[in-house]
Image 1 (cartoon, helix red, strand yellow):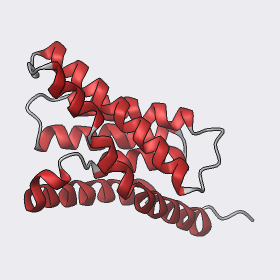
Image 2 (cartoon, rainbow, N blue to C red; image 1 turned 60 degrees about the vertical axis):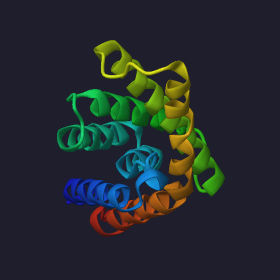
Image 3 (cartoon, one colour; image 1 turned 90 degrees about the vertical axis):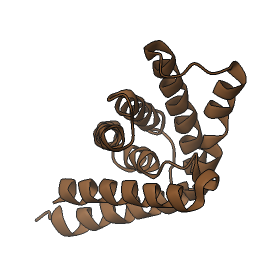
Image 4 (cartoon, rainbow, N blue to C red; image 1 turned 30 degrees about the horizontal axis):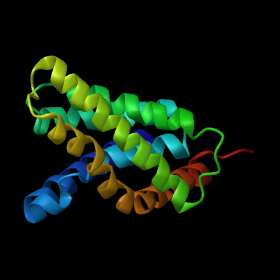
Length: 167
């Protein structure tokens, strides 16, 4: 049940991201809702769940929007795993900590994505463009991250309360 809900949520977030990017264009160019969800899931549950959500959402983004299958998959899953590892010993109830971890994870995601794109020949731009591609999109992600973290926390709390019955 939990897997089905998370899978549907990843699909819904991908559709919302595609819709907003078509409607608002440059204002949402750095916003990556499935990536933020993978980060929040790795913060709420554990790094393996975040890795799995990152793998599924990255593969879905590669299949729908990418030109090279695997770039989003690798970058999303690895960065979600790193965020999950780094958030193990942190109190994650505060929005500032969530925003900080999403910012760091987004920078790691963009860095991995740019490195893969450079090695595969998909990106042949100037260093100024590469730096702006790595640094500016994480700021868009930190704005929406507390809302997605709250959604993920509430879903996880719901499943723990109603489906993990202890007698």
